Amino acid sequence: MNKTLTSFFSALSITSACVLPFMLASTLPGLASSPSHAEQPQLPAIATNTALDSARQPMVALALGGGGVRGAAHIGVLRVLQKEGIPIDCIVGNSMGAVVGGLYCANVPLDKIQSILSDGSLVSAYLPHFLWCRIMISPFRSLLYVGRTKPYAGLVSGTKLKATINKLLPSPNLKVEDLKVPFSSIAVSLIDGQAHVLSEGNVDEVLQASATLPLLMQPVPIGKHLYVDGGIRNNLPTTEARHSGARVVISVEIDNDLKPVPAKQFTSYRKVFDRVMNATIEQLDEDKVNGADIVIRPELINIPILSKDRKYVDDATTAGEIAARKALPRIIERLQQSGIDLRLSLIHI
Image 1 (cartoon, rainbow, N blue to C red):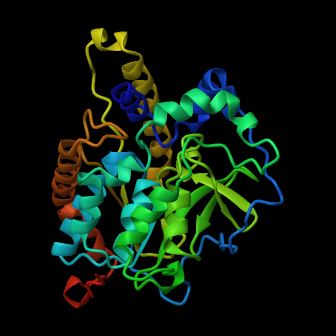
Image 2 (cartoon, rainbow, N blue to C red; image 1 turned 90 degrees about the horizontal axis):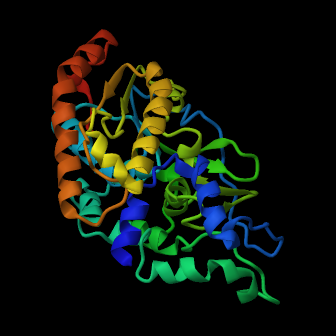
C-alpha cells in the first residue's frame, strides 16, 4: 500500500493544485472544505511587497522554480556558480526552489542541503508512514473533531517539514530580513487567492509556506493569510527577481523535459497524470522565463516530484551542474555587458 501511495504522490506537481482538489474531493469528501476559525492561532504578519531590499542594489538575482525532488538541480547550479565566483546578490524561490534558495541564503552548506533530500528526510515530511490510514479516515474527519476546533484541511500537518528545515538553520527563529543575502519566497494565500512575496518573518515558516502542497499538507497561517505552495500561480518567480532591481536575472527552470515517449506508457494512470501535470508546468513556466537574462534548464528526464530514491537526487544535482556549466559562457558575457567585473565581485556565501 505504501509503495502505491508513493507512486501516486510522486505524480503530484507543484501546480497540480488546480486539478488535485477536484480529484481528491471526489474520493476524499472529508477534505473538500475546511472553514477557518477565529480560534486558529495567527502568526506575525509577513510583508508581501515585491521589492526585496531597496537599500542594497543587487547585481545578480536568481529565480528558482518548484519541482519537488527535481529541486536538487538547484543545488548543482548553485555549486557551479559558487565555485566560479558568480556573484549572487538575491534569490527568489518557490517551493523546493524556496527551500534550497532560503537555506543557501542562510549560509547552510550545499552538501547539507543535499543531504536532507538524499536521505529522504525531507520527502518523508510529505510521505509519512501510514499515510494511507489518514486517507482512509478522512471522510470521517468531522466526527473526530466534535466539540473541538477543526484544523485546516490536509493529510499531514507540515510540522515535520518545518522541523527538517529548522534543523539546518544556524540559529532558531532566524529572520528572513537578517539573512546576509536577500531572499524571498512565493506562496499563495487561500484567503485572497493571490501569489504573495514573503520577504520577512521566520525563515522556517516562510519556506514551509512556499513548499506546502495543498490538501496533502495543512495550509500555513501567517498573519491574516493561509498559505500554500506558490506554484499554483507562480512556479518560477522571474518577474519578482526582476523587481529586485538586479542588473542580471538568472532563472533556473526544473521542468521534466517533454520528449516523445511510447504510447504504451499511458496504460498507467500515474504516467498519464504525470504527463498532464508536466505539460501544465512547462506552459506556466514558459510564460515566466521571458523576463530572465539567462535561463538554465537542467535535463531532468523521468525524475518524479516526490521520491525517497537517492538516485533521483544525485541525477538531478548532476543535471543542475551540467546545465550551469553549459550556461557559464553566456552568464559571464551577460555580466560583462552589464558592467559587472567578476574580479571585484564578492562571493557572498
